[in-house]
Image (cartoon, rainbow, N blue to C red; front, top):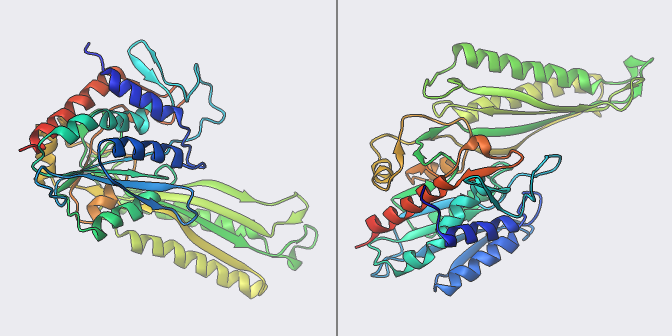
Length: 389
């Protein structure tokens, strides 16, 4: 087996060593990347969150003639999921090679991909590019593709007009053209507390929250039986789940608050705004019933995260370009969501293609096969060759 370059392993190791769990800042990692880009004369733009604690990075390696518009975007997220409560065989933030695999938090999802790109900066900047290569690194993908919204908007505002984008989520280097949308919601029911022996004096928030949760399950069943289907997915319909429920303080107290957390992942043909509207309307209906009992009641419905699905047509040029760079052609679609839908919604044809298997992502002893790193190196090498004059 061909081994990955020492440069790729070094870059991945450095990325893993910076704990960028989504609840924490990613600025130390971003600042390190800025320094690496500066060393090659590549200027970076940072797009911070409102608090200034996190940032996206956008950088352009121009074509040989100075052109900065058009070209290809290489996109990836910098954050990782927590390791809390997981049983690891080695330090998750100290990448370790064992038995042909590189272990560590983010090796697969998706610092392996980012490390390969950073290791290729010398080739990227020395090549006589016929079109620019844009680097787009985001924050908070793992909590709902939060940072990529402003990152994609920056690409649009700068009129960079790339002809295509590769999002390097782990796909085993398959060129994935489709995935479902991701939508996360919180419905908070505020009733009135009372002693359990005097239920008429209170308004039971749990009772109303349970009705809302039942409505979510009913809509889910409706879409499974009568909604659109796409057999390219393991789950061919829009899926929906109540995933968390909070409420009550004691068995002898009418609960004054209950919170329903739910999410749905819809096919690209589903009208997300209309579907979300059904839940918003149901929350308003239940709130009206609660207010009839007591004007102090309320229901707060909010979407906490969301990203559109991806449905890139098979005849899009970016699909054949991916194959020419060595990506594995496939009609398969993946169940997980990515930032690719945001790029596609902005008019940038996008394919998900990155090293590693999603089955290893987020798990204890997360790893990436070394041969997958090699495949990614070959892909980037081919991309540079095909983007050069």
